Length: 247
Image 1 (cartoon, rainbow, N blue to C red):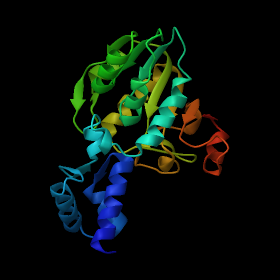
Image 2 (image 1 turned 45 degrees about the vertical axis):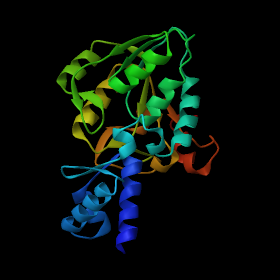
Image 3 (image 1 turned 60 degrees about the horizontal axis):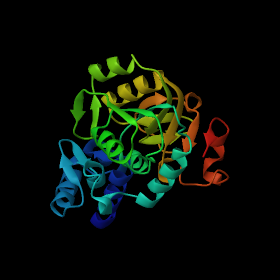
């Protein structure tokens, strides 16, 4: 594979999954980690990714307010509009982080009377800016690579609440492996979010359907709704539709 092709693959993986690890890319592309590190350094110097220890982050994920940097923004706006229909007056809603969740927070109408809990400072700020709903930020250690609060303090706070609906983004989702992620601490937070929620909606762009990461959050039958930018009758979601309601 030529360098340009290799770097295009790296950029796509970073945009799709928000971050990549050098070791994983080395295996996927069958090249040395030194080659991957040189690629990441070059991409970072050209302003295309954010280099971090052991890998790289998506610029859109690290700087979500730069709208021109958000990957698949039109698709994420479609997902946000669909997910909004799940929220009803009087609900208590728990929201995760990520750029799709930010798009949803931006379109919550001021007339909606809800209580929102969130682990994302960015989502909390957006909700507070655009709604009259009560917004409660669940605090803890801020993870710099995900912009969400993590750690035992967050898990303890989540154990003390019960919510009607949990809105959660995902790194990967498949029929066989369910919802998966690549960050151990994030997985623990997501599991705690699921435990305190009556209904769970996973928000995912179509490109993430059928992909798998190393760490499991939950099986597909643990969620109630899958919200994507595809139509419910699209062939790509046939397998998912057997276990959850696809929106």
